[in-house]
Amino acid sequence: MQDIAQIRVIAHRGASFYAPENTLAAFELAAEQGAAAIECDAKLTRDGKVILMHDDKVDRTTSGRGAARRFDLKAIRDLDAGAWFAPKYRGERVPTLDEAMALWARRGLFPQIEIKPCDGRAEETGKIVARETAKLWPRDLPRPLLSSFSMRALEAAREAAPGLPRAWLTERLPKDWQNRAERLGCVALHCSRKHLTEAHARRIKAAGLALRCYTVNEPALAKRLFGWGVDSVFTDCPDRILAAV
Ligand code: G3P
Ligand code: MG
Image 1: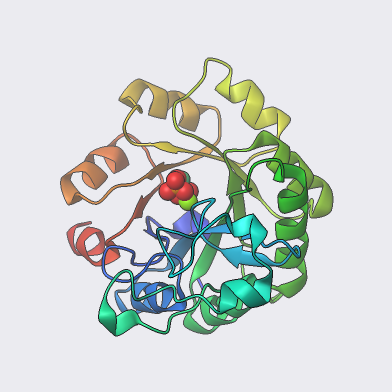
Image 2: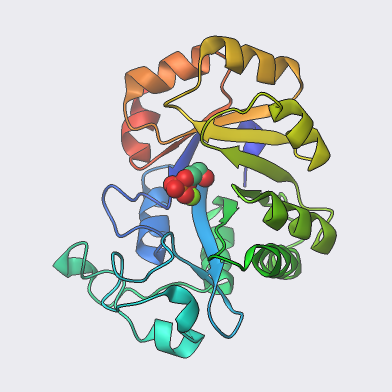
């Protein structure tokens, strides 16, 4: 398995242009397409188990209705997480962190785990995701990278698993970005491609931080960002970006 420092293309929620996001099928396909890393979104069920899902509600990406935080693990596992995307994915389940980790380790996919807490659960989610990641991930593989938009989640993750590297995730760069990243002990800054300028990128790199951008599905844009010093891009279609760079 490669370490994130050598990886330019990260499959965003798996190969999510072609397969239902944040499912084992999407991660498997990312590996088949040659991706060396995946990004996923991790949150908690009502009973405090770590699952992979982007939205606060289960509606868009499963056969269920309502807030993810109202489901116990058993109930969320009864939902279909693939049929909404295409009939051939019927039967996909909402993955648990541990089963996804087994797949990533087996397929040599470096995990970039975004902590995506439901409202009011930032600290709890940061703590449990970090603790479980540190406990379950094989010691002989490169350490996974945690990220979050939530500073409270990142602080809790640092406390629970100080040995796991962290990235601060922000859509736009606030003026005090360097201060914030340093305060959180982050090794990287992850931001939207929409608002990043070349001058920003150069300053972030000069500050010694790794820089990654989401979501980049056009090869020409990926090349431009790499030219600015961006280290890696998150993409829904790793095949397309890998073929071009
Ligand atoms: O981690 C990068 C990216 O996934 C952040 O935005 O909304 O796609 O989780 P989002
Ligand atoms: Mg994400």
